Length: 235
Image 1 (tube, helix red, strand yellow):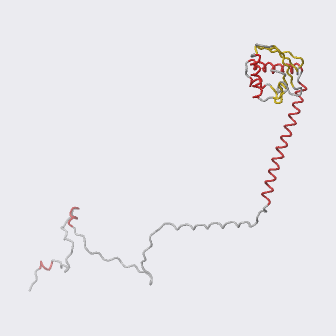
Image 2 (cartoon, rainbow, N blue to C red; image 1 turned 90 degrees about the vertical axis):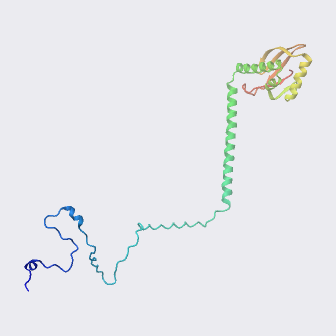
Image 3 (cartoon, rainbow, N blue to C red; image 1 turned 45 degrees about the horizontal axis):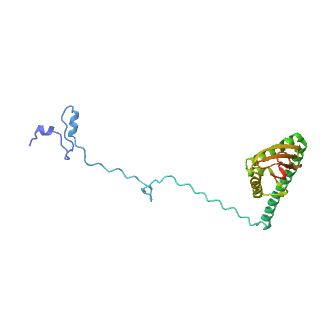
């Protein structure tokens, strides 16, 4: 049997069918790639060889840097077991009280001595004319208050130990005596002042029913600015 020469010229086809379609002869356009079917099987990756006893171990999850160690608190200082003596607070209190008392006494003595020196200096520097003028002003104020029947203001011009008609009177006693004088002779309508010396004055008093003289005296040891009438033989 003779073989067909056309069959002998044909190449032998592989027994395995190719998954890829046969390409047409000649150049292929790009859109022909869409008709290509990718393979559905790939060879497995090669196994990684590890030494004996070792394998793939998963890493623990990352939790951030490790916290710094907290320093331990310092131990408390040891307390002193030494006790203060019981008399120490009493001694301190006594010292403070004694210091305050001594300071107060020294201040009082210094003030008293200064007041005495100032009084002596003022007495020596006050002239008789100045003293007479100051006393005359007191007498004028005294009888002006009596004339206006303001007996409380008149009582202020008397010294604390003054005597009226030979007796020491408080405010109530002075008010009773002045009002009795008004009822007996009437109110004071006028007065005049006459001085004998800086410490003795005579006041002529005019009332509705009487005219009389009243003698006023000032203490010789008092200052002009603080001097008041020390005695009066009438109102």
